[in-house]
Amino acid sequence: MQQIAFNEISAAEVSAIPAMQQLKLFFAFKVDEGCLTGTPTDSRFGVMERDGRRIFRFRSDDSDYRIYFTVEKNADGDDVVVVQRVLHADSLKDFLFRSGMGADAEDSKLSNSRSFWKLIEDGEKAARK
Image (cartoon, rainbow, N blue to C red):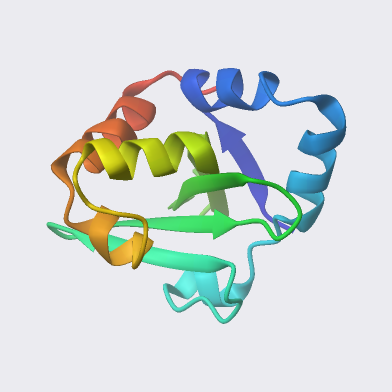
């Protein structure tokens, strides 16, 4: 079991989700060894890379939310899953539409989007909860 940490932005995004949906979302959010090594085996997970940076995406079957997270080491050398953003699929589709990227091939298109990486950087810079 990995520790999960949230920043101020992702914590606020989660708190805006109704409690039962939060439970469903995080019950399904199980980060496996493949994610920790950068090769997820579960099709609900994706990996995006740009300029040497890597972020993972979890797309739940039971909800319309996407969790974008990184995996970092804590002081003891243990893996910590840091949730950078939690976005509703509708807001993501809107983002893709407004960015002129369409909704297909989501991960590869987001990997090349400066706007998406700015969204993630804002989460990374936010204080952790």
